[in-house]
Image 1 (tube, rainbow, N blue to C red):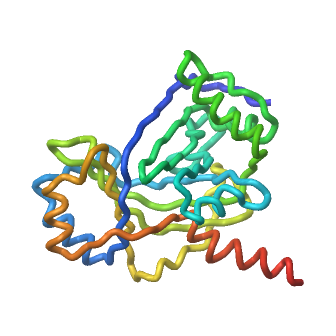
Image 2: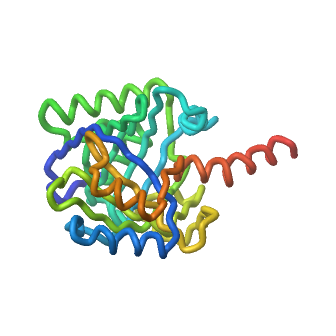
Length: 252
């Protein structure tokens, strides 16, 4: 039985934005930050680890559907910053993408309540107000429709920045993408297998904006010959690690 000894105020977040990704070398990332130093500020929490548990069906419907590049796709995940304990605030969220636009709908509850819901279907007690319950209803609909369960632990280290005069424009750099298919808990900080992205000392840069890429950023990207790529962390791990393993199991 989960006993919430720490008061966590119900918190929700819902937003819409565009996300563009770039696979950079260490030097390209350093050159970009140098060129953009006058227009960027470090985020309040600029250097941290993000840990995720991706939820999927037994046949990996969500990620397989996503890799088909449909007009609309969605993912379910549990997320925290660093390593969780029972009373840590974690995000239970739906990440949707429709015609290139990303939508996030998420609730924040204690880790113990999130796991009781995922494992036993018990609604989190910490939800308060209309919006948290509305978002939870959307999440619950996907659980009832697809019966997803934890399938992958995925973590990475992030540095984050935002534009001084356009705070809604954020730029992040992710490194050390790692995963495991066992010990699927945000409370466990055990070693995980690092992903080979094909770029040595890579920096996965994500440009996040609501309307259009600012001209200042576009100019820097053009001058440095930095071009967008299609890259999904979960998708790459599924393609490189999970799918071959399943094919091998089928043929044995």
